[in-house]
Every structure is written in C-alpha cells, then in structure tokens.
Image (tube, rainbow, N blue to C red):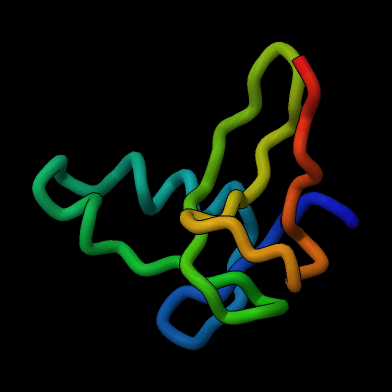
Length: 76
C-alpha cells in the first residue's frame, strides 16, 4: 500500500500540490462541494497537507479496504 499523490478532479488527474492549492483557494462555503476522487478506486478523497510526521497525500473520506491507497490501521 502506498500514499496517493494524485487524484481525479473533474475527470483530470491532478497532483496533491494542485489539489491543496484548489482547496485553499476556494471560499469556505465552496470547499465542501469540491469533489476529489481516488484515481485507483474512484471513491471520494480529500487532500491532506504535510505535517511533522507525514508528507502531503490524499486520504479516503470513508475507509475503503479494497483500495491500494487505503492507509493501514495504526496502533497507539
């Protein structure tokens, strides 16, 4: 399994950097209507910005264990 670095947006493949730019440029009332789709399974994803412990990537809105990009469960 890997981290998704690209997605489908209105039928076009875009990078995580482009998706973050689109999301950040949208007005707060329009952000919820942006539809990013996993390029592997077609399910909705959202862009996640880089943090201290991870690189920027897409995450599924609802877990999809069938997808190659689903993150494994973490033990805390």
